[in-house]
Each structure stands twice: as C-alpha cells, then as structure tokens.
Image 1 (cartoon, helix red, strand yellow):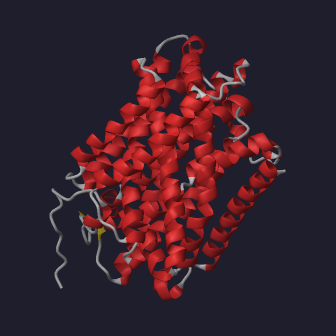
Image 2: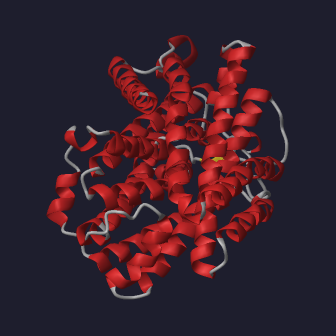
Length: 439
C-alpha cells in the first residue's frame, strides 16, 4: 500500500483538526526524521517556563540562594518521564488522555476529571494573565490593572494564528523560547554567578526543604514544572506527526517523540535554572533576601547590575513567556474540552471563555491584595496546579501500563515502578503541605 503524505499548508492548529498533518518521511535518515518530529515537545516545554515558574524561582533564589536548584532539576527530570508517557499514549492508541478518560471511566468520574483539568487550565491562565500584565506594567509604565485588561486582547493573536499550520505555530513558539533563553543568557553574563556554589545547589538536600516555607516553594516549583494540562496537551499534539500504523513505525515514532521531549525539556530546565540562579546571584548574594515579587526583581536589577539592559531584557523575556504560554494553554483547553465533553467550538471562543475566567480572579486579587501581591498569587496558582497533578497523573500511568490498551507499547516494569514512585512522591508532598496548612 502506498504511504501518502497530505499537504499541510492550511491546517489550523486546533488538535482535533490537525491529526496526522505534519509528515514524517518514511525511510529518511534518523536525523531528518528527528527534525520532522521535533515540535510537540517544544510546545509542552513552553508551559515549563511560564510566568508561574518565574515567581517560584525568583522567590526561591532570593530567599534561599542556590539551595533549591536541585528541586528544579528533579522536577524537570520527573517532567521528562511523565511527558514521555504522554507521547507514548498518544502514538500507541491514536487518542489523547482526555478522550481515553471519557471512554474508560464512568460519566460522573469523567466529569470530575474534566472539572479538575479545567481548574488547572484556569490556574495556568491566571499565571499568564498576571505575567503578561506585569510585563506591560514594567515595559510600558501602565498600571497593573490596565495591564490585566490588555491581556484580554490576546484572543486577536489566536484569531490570526487559527488558520496557520501547526508547523508555523511551532516555529513561533521556538522563536519565543529562543527570546527567553537569549535574554537570560545575557543576564547571567551580567550578574556573573559564583559557579561552584551553583553546582552545589544541584545536589539534593533534605535539609533544604525540611521547613514549611521552602517546602511550599518546592511544591510550587513542582506545580510550575509538571503541569496537569501539559499531560493532556502532549498526548494530543504528538498525533500531529503522520506515521504509518504498523508496529515498527509506531515504535520508531515513540523513540523520536522521546528524543524531542527530552531535548525540549532540557531547554526548559536550563531556563528555569537560569531564573533561580539570576535571583540567587543578584539578590540573595547581595543581602536582598526579601525579593518575592517579579516587579521588585525588575527594578532592583538595574542598580545591582549597573545598567538598564538587564531590566529591559527581563521584561521582554517575561512578555515572551506569558504570550507563548497563552498559545499552548489555548490548545490544551481545546483538547480537554473536546476530549471530555465532545464539544467542538472555535479555538478563539474557548480562549475567550478561559481568559474571562482568569481575568476575574486576577483583577479581584490585585484590587483586594494590592499590586504587590502578584508574586504571591503566581506562587499560589502553581501550588494549585501541583494539587491537581495526581488526578491527571493517575489515569496516565494506569493507561500506559494497560497491555490491553497499549499492546506491545505498554510500560515495562521499571517504567511502571518509576512512574508510580513519582506519583507517590508528588501525592505525599501535597498531603504534607495540606497538613502544614491545617495544623
């Protein structure tokens, strides 16, 4: 049977409409296939460097120096494991996590999962609203409230991208991620960290998270890194790659997806570590251990580093982070809505509804707690994401370990043990934090 490759020039980026829209050439060299397969992991990695990550990393670096760098490293490694499972699920079954959850659970359980997933989307979008609003505030000098209102107009960008191909969207995300990375590379050169101390921070230490405050931040870092909506997103967008349905082709596709995922999340790890290193070097090392707000970090960079370039780069990177996360959050919301409720509405309408639900708590929070509360709201949103994570992770592990569903692509024993170990650690950390709050 001849293996045909469709044209993709006008494919929209909503996942349900682009399945198998990006060709992977059969019989091509590995490097060429790897290039053609690259992209889904990048879209997922964008969520690993959103404004919520900034808030947790800046506060962690300012208050505790380099000591929580190991949390960033371990959370990123856990993310690589989990996202590889998502790619495996999508490629082996041809369906995403939301669709399979609807099919395999009772209607009541599926709707509960949908509600929790929707909460994670709103929490993510809250971080994006606050991050973009703060970037507008810092770069344009407008009030934070005005910045929040300006973020409502990013649906116009969604409209402009809706009829573009998925490959073009991935190229835009790559450009935004590169902008963030270049800005932080220059910033690190300006602050000149003491690298031996940086290396020590990557060594795991129970003492570093033995108290409630660093543990709260550690869980925030985890929630900001391994996001629930990314599990649904990855299991869907990986299906945009057009591969044959035979076992050998799907096995190769899973390997290519693993390569794409690990490479993309390694980039996210470097950026998240750079944010914490910047905060530890610029603030903690100079005695400014009370910097917990992004805007404080922005204003302090100039006098500490000795020039306006650092703060401008910081603001540009923050804006790029918020906008890129907005795009991927839109696609994830569409996956969740279509998968659980089988509702197909235009992406821009789904974007508008989600943004409206995030704008209200953002405006209320800033009005009630003041403009200096953005950092606290961002960290709280990431803790909420961490609390939601086990409810998406549990069905993912169960499904990818089910030989009836996955066939020869089911998790091997060591993969299952590692996945359940991560699930246990995440769940116990969340329970411990709840106990600390209650008692």
